[in-house]
Image (cartoon, rainbow, N blue to C red; front, top):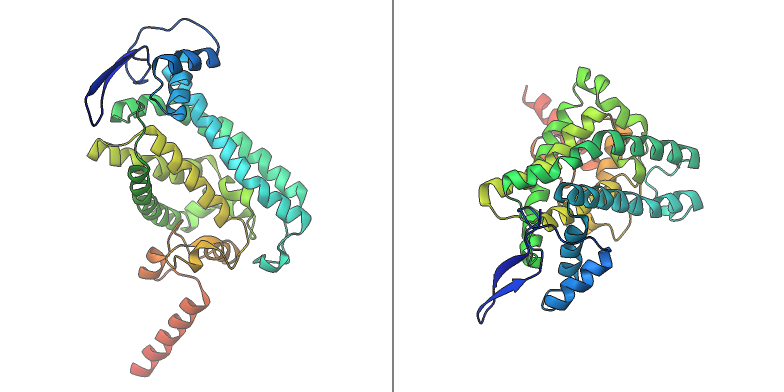
Length: 320
C-alpha cells in the first residue's frame, strides 16, 4: 500500500513531508475513504510544493488504496486511450478521403466495415490477452525495483531513457519479427497480421495472441532490463515510452507518407513508407523504428536496396 511520509532533499535542506503518499509500492496505513478529488485537496493542503501532476498521481493511489488495482487500471486506461485516440484521426482521414495524394497504396483504402472488424478484433485481444498481462505489471515492477514514488524524473532523464528503449526494442523487434516470417511460424502465428496488405492505423495491433506476447515482450522487457541493471527507472517513464511506441506503431501502419514525415529529417527512422512496403511485399523491412538493421543485414526492401542487389549480382557474374 501507500506510505504516508517521506524525506525529500532540496538544494537548501532536507524536508520531511507528512500526510503525503509517495511510495505506492511500499506498505502503508490505509487512508480514510473519500472521493478522488477529496484526496487531491487534502494532499494539496499539506504538500503545496508538489506539482499538480504529482498531486494527481499521489491522490490516485491514495484514493484506490490498492496498488495492484491502481496501477492496473491506470496502465490499461493509458493503453486504450492513446491507442484508439491516435488511431481515430487515421480513421477520419481514410473515411473522408483526406490527403489522398499522400496515400502510399492509393487504390487500397480501408472501408468502415474493415476498420470496425479490425477494432473489434483488437479490443478482444486487449481484454483477453493484454489486460491479464497488464494486471501482473505492478508485482513485476515491484520485483525489479521500478519507482512509483515522487518527485517525478526530470524530462532529460525520461528523454534519454526512452531513446535507449527505442533502440533496444527495435533490435528485439527486428530479429523476432524476421523469425516470424519463417514458413511454419508465419503460417501459425504471423499470417493474421498480414491480412491487410495495405495497412491502416488500427491494424497496428491486429495480430495473433502469440505474436502480441512475443513482440510486446520487447516493449515491456527492454525497460525492465534497463531497470534491473541500472536500478533507475520510474513507472512514469515507462508509461511515456509505451505511449510513444504506440504512436510509432500506429503511424508506421497508417499508410501515408508526408513531406513532413519524421524520416525526412531523421534518415535512420523507419516510418510508414518502410513498413507499408513490408505489408505490400510480405518481405524485408523487419525493424520497427529504425532502418539500420535492415540495411546492415541486407533485408531492406526499397528501390535503392533492390538496385544495389541487382548491381551486386551483375558484378558477381562479371567476376565468374
